Length: 420
Image 1 (cartoon, rainbow, N blue to C red):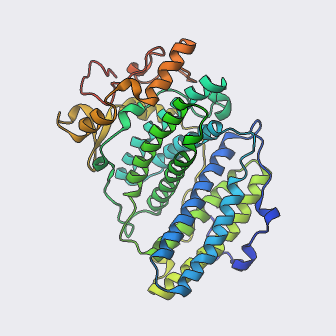
Image 2 (cartoon, helix red, strand yellow):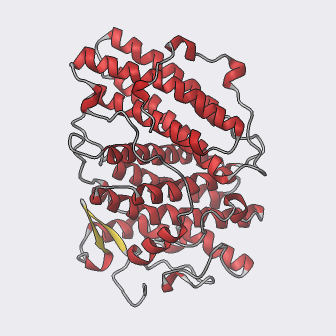
Image 3 (cartoon, rainbow, N blue to C red):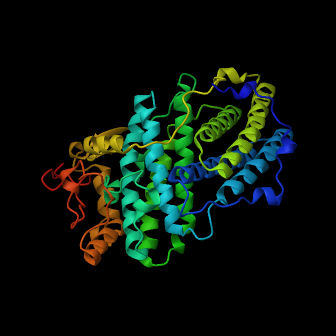
């Protein structure tokens, strides 16, 4: 297996791109493999996280020599982000890109959950998986209504489009978004990678909806982006709370750079698009340089060696593949779960005075004004039923009715109304 610490790093100044290099040849939205898009969206989010983290480190550091080291690497990270993000073609609409974002959320979360050794972290991944799965369904119905484009053509049936835990049921009190953090001193490297990757991915989706949601072409779509954008904030809080707050800035820098090398190497192995594959290779070489620099800074400023925090050889590589059976399994088992502080619980086991019901009553006081419900209701009225792309009927009986949107499952204590 590949060990980035055994590679000779390129001089960091050699990483600087000119404008012609930085502006890539975009993919064809008609021909692109959905997993190529998934990789692009994820790596865009990873590079955005790298830049944001570096800026925060910079603002909390008093040593200008160290800040200059951060600034140099950060400039390259920013160029990499532009290099990746501009792969999106001009003719790909905002909502078509959004379908890609939710595809990332489903297949990435499912893969990480299946390869997560820490059961508490796996529980967190499985829990949010069903919510992003529902977001894909809601946005797909909006796309079907507004542009008459079936989302399964965009994802090429790599992922099913069917209800998950209804978005209306996902709105929880902020207290419930805080999980127990992982001890990175004892955690498996896979757990460190998985928590860093999923936090960056969800943060990118949150930022994307925050910034483009209000530019949608009609009010219903704007409302849907606003609502789902709020759930993405919950997810970022949930996943971010898993990260170890005891890790120092330089330890975190090392982990960030190792994560980037791991992902670029993983995706270089599987990429089918020759143009995109060359970008993964180029960025991998750049990130190896950043990783060696992070190790050098950790030793210089904290007298710590990289071997204390990461292995040299990468663990199992991240490879996107069909996760439909796994998602169906989790849907059938966990549809009615919600959060109770640091714990996952069945909604029927919560006391009547729980903050979940208080928050639901406030934010979803009028069910018929909740955008995620209105989108499905309007599609059903316009076309006779909702839009789905299923291999077979839903695992959950209460979600099989294509003419009525279920707004009670996972948010009320009435088992009769939310029959599973």
